[in-house]
Length: 235
Image 1 (tube, one colour):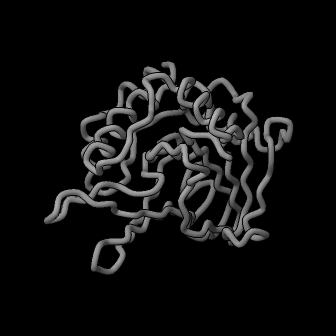
Image 2 (cartoon, rainbow, N blue to C red):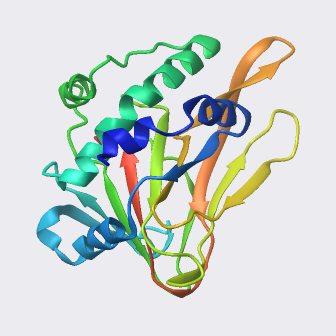
C-alpha cells in the first residue's frame, strides 16, 4: 500500500473526534517495520539534513534531532502530502470555532509556497534520536506566523524492545484549573496526530483556546527514533 492509501484508510471521523476531545489522537499503522528501519538509518547520512540540534546545548532537554533538507526521502514526502488533505478540514473547523483566519489552501505545495513568500523557507521535517537518559522538554513547534495547527509524529522503533521509557507527553493548560497531562506509547510504525499550539475548548461564552505543549519522557534504555511531520516551514 502507498502512504496515500494507508493514511486514507485511517478512521478519520474517530480521529477528528479524539482530536476535539483531547488535542491528540493515535493512528493505526502507517509504516512497515522495514520502512521504519530505513528511515531511522538515514540519521547517519548528514547530507540528508540542513542542521543538527543538540537539545542539551539549547536547554531543550537531552538528545539530538536533525531537520531534513527540502529534498525529502520519497516516503517522508509522500506521507506528509497524504496527511494534509485529511487534516485540512479539521484545521478549518477549529479556526471557524475560534474565530480565527483559515489561510490554508487545498494544495499543500501552494501553502508551503506562501510560507516561503512570508520568509519561512527552511524545512521543518524532523528526524529525532534519543538514547538512555535523553528527554524532550514541553514545547510547541511554532516556527513563524504561518502556522498549521496540527502535526504528526511517527514511531520508528519498537517500544519495550528497542528502548524503554520515552513516552510521548502532552500537557493542556485548562482555564481556571490545574493543567492536565497525558502520556502515549506508540507502537512501531504508528503515528500520533496532535495540535501544534492549542485546540478549541467549549466554554459558557462559546469557544476558547486550550493551550497545549508536547514533549518526551526520559528514555531509560536503548535507542528511540521518531519522524516528525510539520505542515509549515520555519523562519
